[in-house]
Length: 78
Image: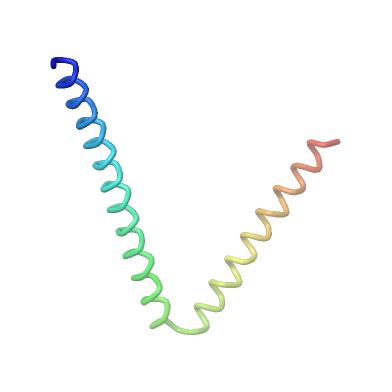
């Protein structure tokens, strides 16, 4: 009987821990979604030129980072 009681408490504790982690992750994800949606709303009300410039700048940064990464891998292979 004691073993059953201990194992039940252990399972209950683990389940509570897993559930609390899940709730924490879900809360952080929803906060992230709220922040992103606010940024999108702000961007949609902003000047179209600013959005285009930001898109071009982001594309340049991503392309540069990818090229640098590829160049680094090529140098490591040699």
